Length: 262
Image (tube, rainbow, N blue to C red; front, side):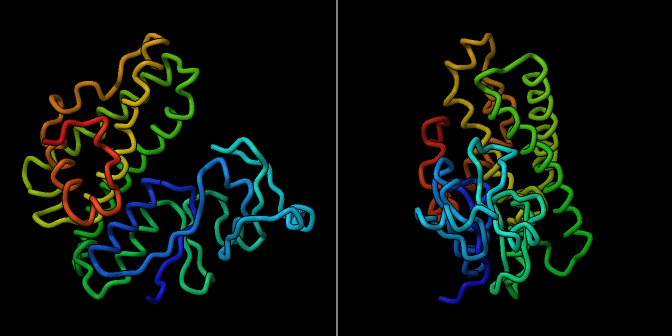
């Protein structure tokens, strides 16, 4: 099958799932390359990403970069990778020949949605509808960035980070709850990429419940402890989409341990 978009990332990655679910819904082929987070220092970050061997480590010292975010070891990133991805992060998307880099998971998802002749996942030809979808994606990105910091600091959490994450969580889900009061989906009466992004990022945050004991040891409760009762429309929307064929094929049983879905 012809490759339409290539993504390099750590795996599994709920942010990559956004593009994979979108691709399934519109029959676009996304090729994902990567490895477990702890193994990515052993990879050459590039359009033609590959695992390094002993000789590579000696020959490619010019590509050795100090890790800055989320990784503890040095990383190997080509000059071309950094030209296409100036922030140097993953997931890293590319067009079919690697000449264009696309970064940030919501933007990669948009690129996938645009590859179909049927653009309904991204508002069709209605530019104001597209802008409304973008508004939710921007709000979603703000929430996602806050919980990325929160997750990385769970071992040494403090009051400031905890309160900041709680505020971001409440703000984001208050908005989603209001949107779902007037329509079946976040933007209108059909699924869009705003719904896909919502499911993947919220699902990732809800896995904080895996760390319930760690939080309690530090004197904190789960931020999402009462999610199902506090945000019933959001919970039902998440459950409905998560259990559909395209979402389930990608996400597998990711939420089974932390949510009651029956």
